[in-house]
Amino acid sequence: MDAEVRRRFLLSLLSIGGGKLVNSLILLIQVPVFLHYWAVPLYGEWLLLSTIPAYFSLSDLGFGTAAGSEMTMLVAAGRRSEALRVFQSVLWLIVFICLLALFLLAVVIANVPLGHLLGLREIGGEESQWVVLALGGVVLLGQIEVLLQGAYASVGRKAKGSLLKSGIALLAFGAAMAAVALGEGPAGVAAFSFAAEAVGAAALALALKSDVEWIGFGWTNARWEDVRRLSGPAISFMSFPIGNALNLQGTVAIIGFVLGPTSVVIFSTTRTVSRLALQAVQVVNFSVWPELSRAFGAGDVGLAQRLHRRSCQISVVASLAFIGFLLSIGPWFIDHWTGKRLPAEPWLLLFLLLGVAANALWSTSSAVQVATNRHQGLALRYLVANALVLPLVWISAREQGLVAVAAALIAAELVMNTYVLPDSLKRTHDTIGAFLGSLMHVPPTLRRVFGK
Image (cartoon, rainbow, N blue to C red; front, top):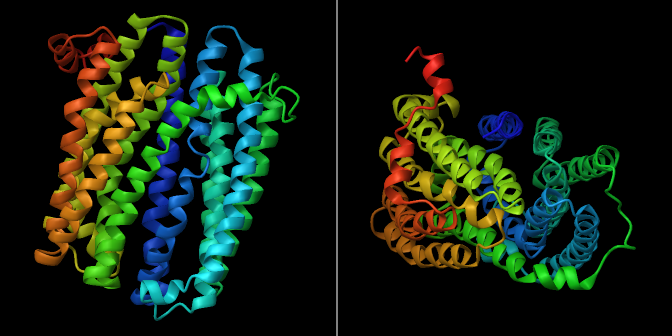
């Protein structure tokens, strides 16, 4: 890799790593804050309600993510006017879809007894409706932000886009925690979060307009044919948030139904700690993604191969280091983090971390497919794997409890490994032997650092 590629990759690693650190701190801070001001049952019901808006993360039909990869490949090929056309076409499509989704959400929650269906006792029916509506608005604004970040990545400024997004996350989090400390209930906290997210999204749009000279927010360049051309890759991207929702929110919903709100808090808290290791994997994945798009867009398969090898190596090493660290301090940390109000579950943490280990290689390797908008097979398998694991989660929760649930979730990760890596090696003209050898190879730069 030449110096410019290394510079962009390292800047992305640092900025996205900073963003993941911010997200991790948010997750770590919010639990003791909520538990200090709210009772455990109320916090458990808040978590249950929060799972509903998460499903609206698929509301842009995957167009924002697909457009980001497409714009990056077009800019790499010197076709900026076409990149602008894609940006405007997808922007107005997402705005329309988000407004429609918010309207439909309002209609549905006004006519569905959420409190009764979820067995809520601490949060009233009308209040639960406002919580879901406001948090749904937060998620929908995030869909527009995905496209704006994609525009930053297309010009090699992924780092700045990530930093600005982290600022939005901090703003929304600060608003929510202020609301909690001021004595607001769930509806007030959700409203504060939505207001802060709206301000952050507007600021991100203004910054993008100032930083990227060819970006325009009009509609004169929008073309329906661009939307139609991207519809296949975009709709396939929907499988990822759906799969994530099935894995994350689906599991929480099953635990809440079978074992109750207190078990939801125990599982969610422990999983929050385990997912700190997953952050390392995601940092590498999101950092290498635009560089792979740029390499394939320029027709440089050799660079794509080197990026794939190095990113997988970094991901495996980083995730194993985090897993070892969390295994050593996790139970002690959970005990002190929650003020001893929740029991630490060492076996639950162990199996959740084993799931992270099973996830590390395939999720990083999958950047090859998503960076080129050739991820349809990957997306379908991800969706099916997470859907099929839910009955196993239900049985595990009912028969054995939370540790068995964590063990059941590993099955989906193992299935994904059997498909992703062979496909990525084929697309980068690599072999399994050479790839595995590269994982054991220490780059010259590191050898010089450690004197070897």
